[in-house]
Amino acid sequence: MNSNNQRGPDLQRTASCGCRRLRLTLSGEPRRVYLCACSECRRATGSVFAHRAIFPESAIVATRGESSVWRRRSDAGRWIEQVFCPGCGGLVFMRAQAMPGAISVSVGSFADPGFPPPAAIHNQSHQPDWYCLADNVAKN
Image (cartoon, helix red, strand yellow):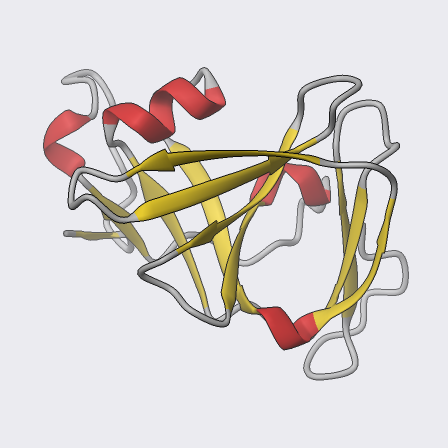
């Protein structure tokens, strides 16, 4: 959570699971914020899309708490690791073979209403017909 409204490279945000036992503190702004409507992301989040932010792994300032990792394969056959709390099951972030040196953090884990909006949606063809995105979100 961003408690002092700073922005830029000195900004620090903490993402946490639902029970708050797993915490990840990051510095700086995300490289990219996106939505993904692929079936695997929908299953992982239990929603119609995943809302995530990509940070360099070097942005990790601190981690606290125990985590579990589940590794799966993407449609392209590369591995994706989902890192979650073993207590409440909350998915906090992911690592992917396709993104070396980066992590993808679940935006809802920040509980920050001022978090930057998504710039794009991936796998839009998988989203429900009834869902409409704002015009400023790129459709990939």
